[in-house]
Length: 387
Image 1 (cartoon, helix red, strand yellow):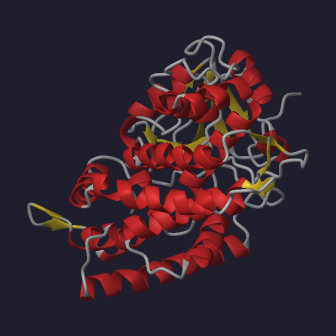
Image 2 (spheres, rainbow, N blue to C red):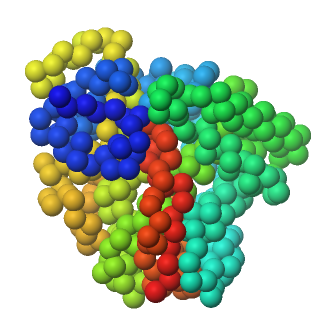
């Protein structure tokens, strides 16, 4: 009997064979282990993402949701409330001109890359990508320097889940509470002394007299810290993993950095860190011979949709010349990621600088250990050997 359990360490390690079985044989599948339906085909996922009236995010979008988060963040609201939140948050992003971050981002990347000069082996995540992403996040949000390691440790814990209980463990809930307390302190300080950073702009964002309330500012800030560290960090580690495993692609990108943007898009399709997000049905839906009931949870398996040969020819091949328009690496529908511009800019600059110092590398023989998360997929450590 076929089983798909998104909490399984085996799925963390390699979900793609199970995804193909889902797409080909069980495109609308009930997973009793996760208590959710699973949609695995690209067209079904895109359709569900656009139909927020049926596939609602208001009860949370993480496969294992954090307490008191649903209904107050961009990812956990539906229109019209979502539109209001997105407008106010986008207003803050516009005021914090992202292009002005390009030079600081390059300085951060160059410093992190230079520290690797002369090394024959290193952990890409611990010694490059995590240092880079946390410092970029701190620069963009305006978080106080010196707190980087503590904030990263707690953010990584927040997105994990216990594979045995299929729930958030006490340490995950404690990390989330720590992050809320930390964010509340920074928000209070920025309101007293505003600066040119995103937290200051969130606190003061206003459109036609409408402003974010206290809970919305707090949970938006907390979510952006989590997303900035885990989503961007996971994105970078998966990109490095893809390039390390595909020598020809890496050599082409190193020889011609103008290929980096296309390689980034293909990595988002081929091996995205954002694998699965959840919705809740508002009405009964019949799909592929199955009846999903109002109130049921539905998993949108973005990682599977990105490997669907109905949409992407030869989907299991990593092809940096593919130009995979419409991939689901940044989600889709009304909940498409708001931070795509800064993510793309950051990764391009980071790998520009990384490849100047480390142009040739491969994975070490150390087995990968994957972060236990029902939503995200990325290694906890990525050992690289300089060639």
